[in-house]
Amino acid sequence: MAVHHGKNGKVKLAANAVASVQKFSINQNVEAADTSVMGDAWQTHLTGIPGWSGSVECLYDPADTNGQVALAIGDSVTLGLYTDGDAVGKRYLTGTASITSIPIESDMKGAVKVSFNFQGNGPLDNETVEA
Image: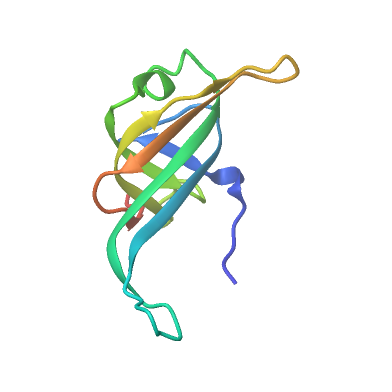
């Protein structure tokens, strides 16, 4: 069984790593159009167009000019989402996404956090890191 720990995860904007990432999530989905009619014993549906969305949560780092600071609401960016690091041969997810919101959380008992929520614009590809 090939499982791995999230500690090696990494998020990149094109070739630039985003600093201080604590977690990221991806949700792939497809709309389902209901085709059930009265009298049916079970629901039926047709699947539509797939999509994806997600978020990246970081410790806020205003010095990360090529990562966190480079992300603004409405930006279209190329994301690389690495669940097990970016060494040659590792698998990762990549695609173009639009930044849809940037919540910032400041808690008197913790570090300031910033999240970047995004929606995919086109396919989410599963790639292999090359040399």
